[in-house]
Image (cartoon, rainbow, N blue to C red; front, top):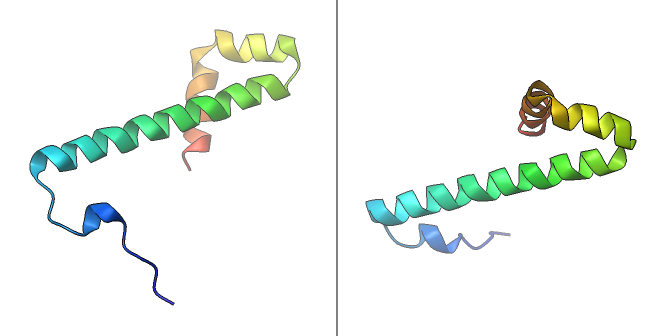
Length: 68
């Protein structure tokens, strides 16, 4: 069974449209990652969440792990 192609593949995209879609996907990915990090902070004890939030290295490590 074939699935329908996404709308953005039905016609050739202009450079502006391609750039807009790229920025939109990048923003969606960043928002999703932020939502996952917030869920992680909510799932751990408050003192652990404070330590994770206080150190940027943890945020980078968590983000890297989520993007795999």
